[in-house]
Length: 122
Image 1 (cartoon, rainbow, N blue to C red):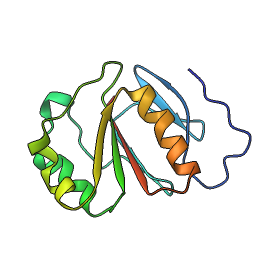
Image 2 (cartoon, one colour):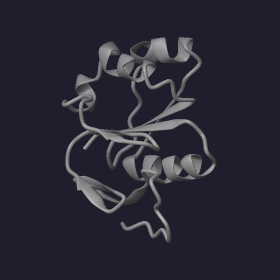
Image 3 (cartoon, rainbow, N blue to C red):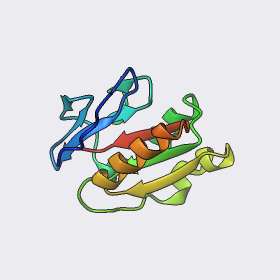
C-alpha cells in the first residue's frame, strides 16, 4: 500500500509498506529498521519476533522516545512486558501493532511533533 504525501521535507515518514518491505521517504527497506523523525537505523535487531529479548528493547533507552511502536508484520503480536520493563520503568510507552498500523500511527504522531520511534520487523 502506498501512502501519499505532498511534502516530505527532512522528516522521515513512511510512504508505503508491504509484507516484505517498507518505504521511508520513498526509499525501500527490506530488513528490520528503527525510524525516528531524524533518521532510519538498521543497527537494531536482526532476528524475528520470536528472538526478541530484553537487550533488544534496551536499545531504545538511548533514543528517549515518548512511545515506541513495534511493527510486528502483517499479524499483530504482543511482546511479553518483562522484555520491555526497562522502557516502561523509564516512562516510555510501548505499543505492539501490525506493521501497517505502526506506519500510519508513526506518521500521525510525527506530524503532531511527538517524540516517537517505530521499530519495524520485516
